[in-house]
Length: 279
Image (spheres, rainbow, N blue to C red):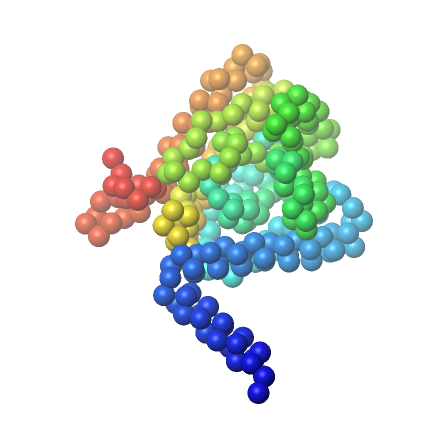
């Protein structure tokens, strides 16, 4: 009698027991499945983009967005969006949003406007199919280890976004952050907006901590609240106005983040984005 099928069945049974009894095992299984889904969909979407447009173009973002928006059904996530129409303004702009986890891609693609490209770290270009689909979608890669290269990319981007009527999406925190608050903003997005004299549109996503938390190994279904704030004009501003512009955007986004991230508790009090009672 061959032992192969019995051994496979035993391993499968052991895996199911682990998933049923261990929250951490379920968390890592879901994250692993999410990464595998990203790789598979990226490969498929790359093929569609190449067949449809033949190469790298911002027009591919509509194809990528269509594929990624299906992820929410796989993971039982719901988006509650307010102010989406503000992203459909005519002309170029800089869009800034908070950055929490690997799930941010779903939030971005849920409301991505037409002719919008993202700024991403250069390392992502080498993630196989994921890097390829980002390249085909017109994502602009910067080398954060070489500030001169990053500055050069940003300086050329200002003229290009006006010339080609592009919207540019940037995470001003510069890195993922799930501590229940916003990190200080880096200034690149604000220099870019002033250089091109285009408005800034802040977008705020509520905290993921009620359904996705790496520290507690939580990954369940949930609702993500999205608020698109009013555009902030930069016409007439100069580089000297950057600190004030950064502060204005940070305060508006931080206030909105805390407001939409509060969860009601059984006693009627509000719970903050980090799980503690709101002050």
